[in-house]
Image (tube, rainbow, N blue to C red; front, side):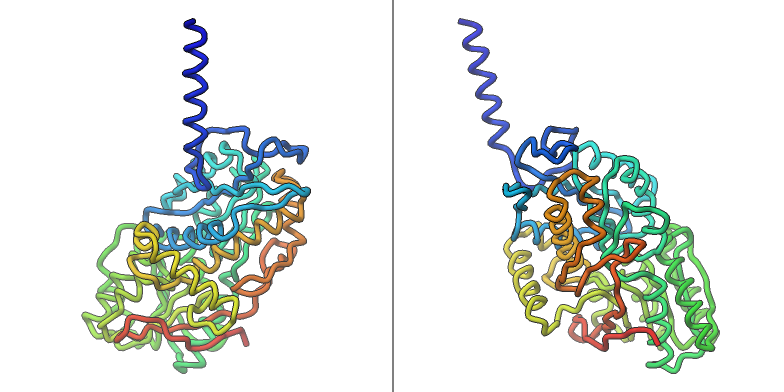
Amino acid sequence: MKKVIALSLALALLLALTACGGSTSSAAPASSAAPSASGDAAVDVIKIGVYEPASGDNGAGGKQETLGIQYANSLVNTVNVGGKDYKVELVIVDNESSNDKGPSAAASLVSSGVSIALGSYGSGVSIAASDVFANAGIPVIGVTCTNPQVTEGNTHYFRICFLDPFQGTVLANFATDSFSAKTAYSLAKLGDDYSVGLCYYFQQAFEALGGKVIYETFPEGNSDFTPYLTKAKNEGADVFFAPVSTEAAALIIEQANAQSLGIPMMAGDTWDSNVILNAAKGTKTDLYVTTFFDEGTDDEQGAEFVKGIKEWINANPTNLSNNGGDDTIAAVSAMGYDAYFTALEAIKAAGSADPKAVNEALWKVDYTGISGRIVFNETGDAIRDAAFVKKVNTETGKWEFVAIQGVN
């Protein structure tokens, strides 16, 4: 009799656990969810890892990139492999914007049995976790990490955005063409791969155009940017370039306005955020960014995405909070959306969820998303030749489209 009761309790527990299943999970110990290495499906779930920051300096941007991935998954949460439909489950981890903690977050995705991973917002954490994914044989699609080192020298890290050598050149050309700039002040965070790298490529391009660059870095934890702004003004800089985190950017904008900087401010894709819009609204700053996507696009596919994700965000308080409290659509959300569907294309082309097969299939993926066509070159980078330039309307707190800019 005791044996019958015990079996009944075990069956009840199993049913309860089964009922708790969902399409999104946090990283957990390895399970039998992933298909076998031979490509034969063991169960009907395929896992995609989401390696993004939800905290730290880049937490705001990481949440918006993740929202694009989650929205895509809400639209299409199955993939057909070998004539059978599999449920696609997102496994989301927080790398905390930390090069030290990123590898542990990546390791938890490996343990969870993901077939492919997406991320990260921030080049430094992407580089920091690269070997973890490589050693596990798991391919990764970088969404908006723009430093060349992310894909250099490996065959597992791919990327769908443009790179910093291109972005730096676009910004240098824009400063020269739009402001007749001869002297630029360039500010990066010490030890930050993204801002240091983009400042380097901007300086190379700007000096090649005949300009002069005053370059400085600030240390971790700095909150007083007044000395840097004052120096730029006193040295007669024509533009102030600071592609730093949105957390530091909000302080820079506030302090630039307080001392009436009077110089156009420029930054890269990181500043395409409603954190920047909120900081700049009501100020007298003149602020420009380069980015991957424009919310005001008249492209039918892009406009449909904007309409749909706004409705999805507004329908859920958590999504609205993760988007910064309003429904402004950041370019990183659009890129997250495209990265998810690029991953599905690779899984379908592989005919398997085996990470090795997916890795091999990625080289031949040809997918047209809302940010444009995605085809990978010999280093695993999508071929891109244009960037959007936008400026802040400081009265409305909205972005205004300026131009689609290439390199001269």
